[in-house]
Image 1 (cartoon, one colour):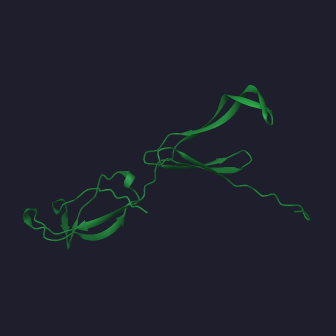
Image 2: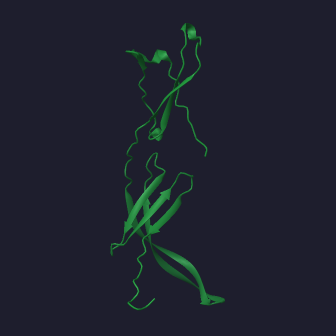
Image 3: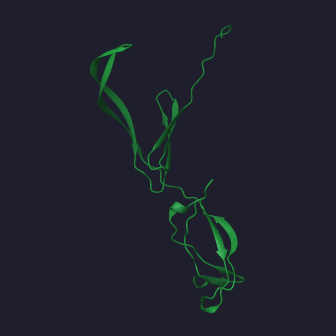
Length: 158
């Protein structure tokens, strides 16, 4: 497993203020893409004129809070599309025709910093399907999960 790290920046003591026995530095202006990630603090002591007098010491690791992203506004639309089909008997696909298909399309506007969307679709019979769209790889990876109901066998049959 590889671990990705990103440098958020270095904050010299001069950017910190003393508070009792410790130094305090407020991190501000962090991009929301770092939400839920961890920050590891490292320190070292230096004397005047920036002369280093100690090695780096690893401090605490703090996890940044997660953020709630906006909910995308989704819309459904029915679209007529003409599809050319070839048909015939098993090995003799000799006929062609243009069929008009009524397709239901789902669309939404992307939300900044969102790389996964989960959408529950429910039909008129209250059957639902869960659609997951993963955009983290650049190209969408779509997974549809549908709960299948098993039919119960009649008594005395298998």
